[in-house]
Image (cartoon, rainbow, N blue to C red):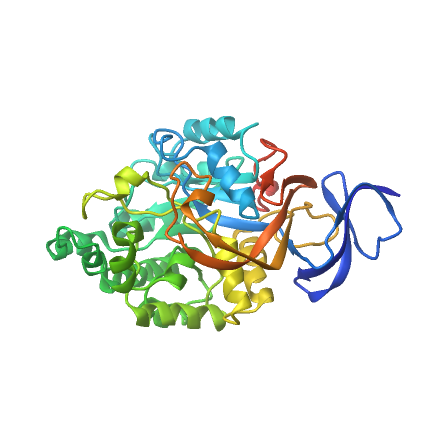
Length: 442
């Protein structure tokens, strides 16, 4: 057989361990795993000295289109993704207008077609007014599921009361994703904001607000017997609580919360560190690392949420919350692998196998026969400083400016198409909607 592409001489990192092997690709699918050094192919990628990973999935990005295109758009966000070794993204609904109707989902899919260089799915946002429509929305083509903001953040989406959150859970069947901060406590604690002091952000959006909301949410999930996904968990207390509820709850953490802690990071980069939920004190940071190592955490997401430099330079609290991250997530985390903070297999579980399991992605997240040929090839030895100048997002900055990273993607392969090689995008606009196992049952 002649294959379309063979990736040879590399070290495979997959669900069954780490070992030498080749990947044969045909018609966008993985057609063989083993020794294909004498087989014929139209393209050969020599991965000698490199590690071959399943395609990285970033299950939380904000690409800002429509309505906030000056910060980012679907095309520039996807370009940042593939430069960072990411082959598929879940994009969030807090755009303008919000992605909370069938029309808005159709609009995003139309906007993505022919422009996004990675595969994609879009969350549908829950509101107090569209609850009766959510069962239909979550089954829409290219829908990653339902996203609920229980605490106010960027945009207008907000469902803060238990009654309506319960109604949401009663209507849906797929695992919904939650921004878990208690809006009632956030409103009470606005007095803790100190103008000009971004370190007060984690006082105004306290660990109590996060824990209280997560406790409410888990109680409702248990009442309605529904699976939930708690996004960007940031506190010691939440991790202590969630370890007793893993039968229903999946957990995400962010590289930012694993990399920085307050008040140090606020002294260093000020409002550029501002995000929701906040970067907190070191004991929370340490607890998140413990949760990553002991298996409590299911997935890593970047929460790529770009704003312009001009916006971020506004004095706190006029400055918006959010940081870019889809391009830097993998190099940052590979650096921690090189430092011995976690294993490469554990990282692959968090960025590939975990999203496949938690969200029921069809044909992605593993290197296996018949799966989409989504492949991220990395050079664990490549060392390079991350700088603002290296960021292709419209934001043109990163909280990791000056971070010496060790480990970078060399190739991003999406369904057999080589879209990035050695820092250059060579095929753009090839992305397609992600399929989900539950949607294939329709």
